[in-house]
Image (cartoon, rainbow, N blue to C red; front, side, top):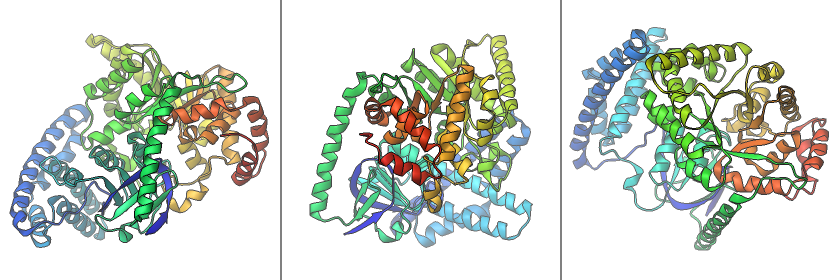
Length: 575
């Protein structure tokens, strides 16, 4: 038996057999093939190539019409590559020689060719390498729709052990019935962790070398709460953990009973608890656990699920309408897409960025690519007739961004009216407070919008200069840093001065201790994963808000996060 300690980022206990994936940063894993299956695999690849070519040509026509001929021209290059005999023959040769699945052959061949182009050192060749990567994605998408090899072929409970998982990896594998994830990289607030929360799948990250330690079909236990992974557990350990699974299911059933209880502190302070939603699977949980609305719908996951296709106006409308109707009359906050860098196809970015976290993302991308965003905004405005619509802008750093959005929304509304398309002119507009500049001008922003939402995930990242997905600096990602606490207080005061509500929708809101800290600072609206609602509600109901406020005034004067944590641990908070 071997116990590995990592970072627990999605609670629960999973017991199953290991499937070790070498992801190579794409949604692909290697399957060895018996020799007699190789000809069928070649035929499957050729059919996928034909489908990918049709898809690229269809997508090129649509993008050309909707977004302009310049962007549509990118797909002409892709179309030529999908008809290039040398490229296709190289993939088929790898399938035959290595006796592997077509997906892996596509991935490895495109990676080799990209490396050769990059070594030539000129922008033209680098761009051709990126075109190859994009074409490879189209081929993979087609292959994964033609009797592709996936985890549904494997019997029993599967635990995925991988070097890394993209958010789309996590969505696809989670929907194939995977019961647990153990990965080498990633942090508590990564998008992959958020997806695991959404699908209620235990996840442990920060496990360097686990792909070398585990082998296919090894028995594995993943404990998402403790952050541990057990390889080759003994019979006694297996029996103990199965008992824990039963107990956790019972506790989950008991938590549903808290649905009707109010989130009110011991001294009578009422807190609104709303739900963060990424995937459609979570809507039922939000209702089941008594969410008072949707405090954050991360619309970028609609893009991630559909990639490389761009969601249509009706795709947006149908998703938003369902959220609004299901939650009515409670509010639904739809965040305009927070995409950029590695999270968005190059066809939309039109650029290569060395530092995408500080680049064209969030509201910046929205305003820079108005024809792309127009599709989403039309869907939002059409859906607004069906409930209480709030629209939120991500990564705002200047007043001008808000004003430009308002003008764009007004023009889009006028366009819909002129067409005779039913839509709602009534929605509340808010901004995410995620960067230090927004904190410093929060008093000005508050006079421009109807509400604030503090995105603590990014605010911590940008204010502490810590990559939230980098396990090497995970110890520096400090939600209790006094600097962060002071910034939250500044935002609360600015919102109060303009008489607008302010919520927190980052992962801090989902932690009972940190949620209590937020309430003590003055936050009265929290938005979090639906399954965390009962636990956080319990913490609030046991909290003396006035006393916590006095403690937090002291904490804001302390010099470090460690000092704040020690001080709070010395209190009898009963959380």
